[in-house]
Amino acid sequence: MPNPSLLILAGDGIGPEVMAEVRKVIAWYADHGTAFDVSEDFVGGAAYDGYGTPLADETLAKAMAADAVLLGAVGGPKYDTLDFALKPERGLLKLRKELDLYANLRPAQCFDALADFSSLKREVVAGLDIMILRELTSGMYFGEPRGIFTEGNERVGINTHRYTESEIARAARSAFQLARQRGNKVCSMEKANVMEAGILWREVVQKIHDTEFPDVQLSHMYADNGAMQLVRAPKQFDVILTDNLFGDILSDAAAMLTGSLGMLPSASLGAAGPNGYPRAMYEPVHGSAPDIAGQGKANPIACILSFGMALRYSFALGAQADLLEAAVNKVLADGLRTADLLGPEGGTPISTSQMGDAIIAALDTLV
Ligand code: NAI
Ligand code: MG
Image 1 (cartoon, helix red, strand yellow):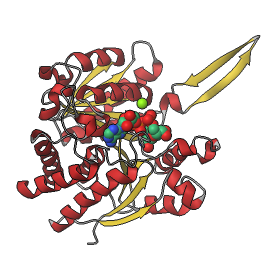
Image 2 (cartoon, protein in one colour; image 1 turned 180 degrees about the vertical axis):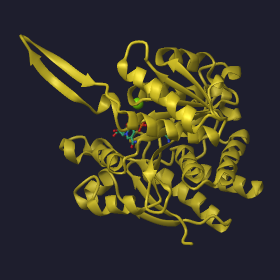
Image 3 (cartoon, helix red, strand yellow; image 1 turned 30 degrees about the vertical axis):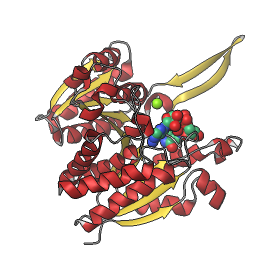
């Protein structure tokens, strides 16, 4: 059996800096029996500089052939004046669209050493480990009709919240499968009280549950109540399943329960690819951070944990993913902090590469 393949697209700004630390982690795993065939290419502004387009056809073809894509970040002030079609972000959106990545996974996980970093009380967030699954390819951001039209003597802006049964069903299946690997609980959020698309959503999720995943615990909640519950008592949840619009907002709110943008990984999954692994792209939630790029200040943990999600969700290497999370936990418990993780009490930050090295050292002590 050949090794599974990873395509690294480091991108712009701090993307290449944090990805350099992920490469150390990948090399460590290769030395410890979990090897990948790794290739690299450009995306975003880096691809514009190299190829004149934010995503070259050859790069897209490599992404389609890879078992998983690891992406750093795209964008930066240098590219702000480019035409819309050439903007770095277009490369990312095209990748998501062409790979048909319909399930966006955003964990909110509280590492114990950072529990006081949250704006919420320690007891509300300590031990928190939830996952939001946001449907990513349909709903309000894609539905037709859309546009700004003229009606009589004024303009009207229109977007359409549209979901087909099959779009809901495939997102629901992903959520239930995910729950089986975690706490076996799904809470589905919509607004079935005021939206027809929400009524259909609830009905289809319930049907998929009853016919295919009766072993998973399912509940339904209106998304506005969900927002309140996320802040009031987030630990009641395991997997939250929701649509594109509500998921955009709820996942950002959930992310902030645990502190810094520099800690947040994500995954976007689609249907099975050429080798049976789901099409998948893993990336930190943060952007290219031009304000700190090139200074060795970026926190590489979000990108490293994104690789951890690849281990778990693409390759079913849960034990290896647990080990990586344990190493991150150990480094934080030892008090090591990049600048973004220093609280009001201050302290001396370590650099991007020192953080990567510390995680490797922690891995060494944990095996
Ligand atoms: P950003 O996420 O790049 O930065 C927001 C703030 O968080 C900055 O102060 C930054 O220094 C800090 N930060 C972000 N990641 C960090 C890390 N790993 N360690 C320490 N501090 C970190 O968002 P912003 O400033 O709105 O956008 C900057 C550029 O990134 C823009 O061109 C934007 O379009 C692009 N962007 C790209 C994304 C992607 O590639 N997925 C997502 C968000 C923005
Ligand atoms: Mg958002």
